[in-house]
Length: 185
Image 1 (cartoon, rainbow, N blue to C red):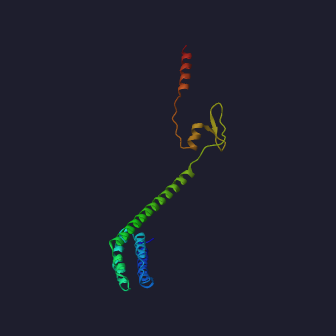
Image 2 (cartoon, rainbow, N blue to C red):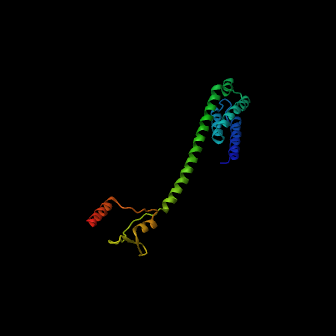
Image 3 (cartoon, rainbow, N blue to C red):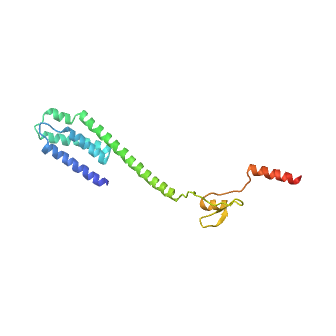
């Protein structure tokens, strides 16, 4: 959500909070929980620091509204007490922390989704060899899908990304050695 829209929502909520205190709250029972909820909403929309700033600004505004009622001094003292202020600050910091964590989680989920899409694209391009193929028993050539005969290393190089280097295995090297010794004798 755009930061200006979040700011407008926070200001509208603040106006609604002050109007609720002024016009809806019974004069003998001020709604302190609304102040904590207001701070939580501002922290969620704008961040923890802005929530703490809102806490500092809400105290005089709340006192101003409560002074218009016939509210006992206990309520006025509670609205500006360090305990209530501390509760609002803790709320602001906690909700702000949750907001940051959710934002980071959303970013990670987006990255994971993009990576997953890339992996799915690469996986769809991978060709898997399988099925039954004709191979000559004598020369070891293989018949491709078009019916052409080619060497197994050419076929595999064309069908996969394999590269070959030719050498002699130990069994064949032993056979060649013994055959060459027999020819010398």
